[in-house]
Length: 143
Image (cartoon, rainbow, N blue to C red; front, top):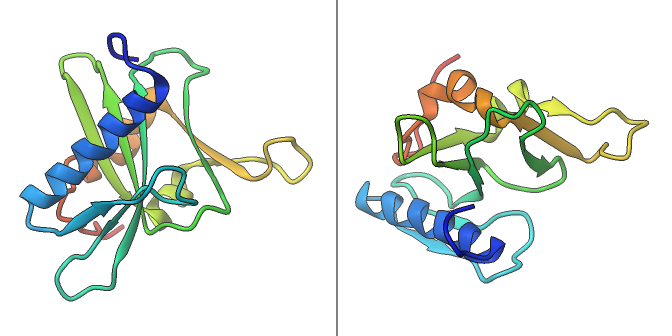
């Protein structure tokens, strides 16, 4: 985490960062109230229905046990990963469509305690989702 921020302040900073970049990219967006279920932001790209965005802000780590985790049951179209304190970068942001995220994430097995969770290894985010870095236009990249 950065400086003297609480976990909530750190998460809020990531949400506001993504919100401002979407706005600068010409996509109207709004932060949902705190503790809103399933997603953090709502955005309205031209010609599309409203898009729900789940935002996770994490400090970069090479640790093999450091994951970005989301619930399988959460309802959102986009997943924003804000990586802070990355090597050679102050921060990196990846806006990933849900289908692309689910295709590459690790999923809890039906018999495990984490069945409802999916995860991406923090240090692998740039290689797995590089095509979605800085994707503030919310474009889907063809597979």
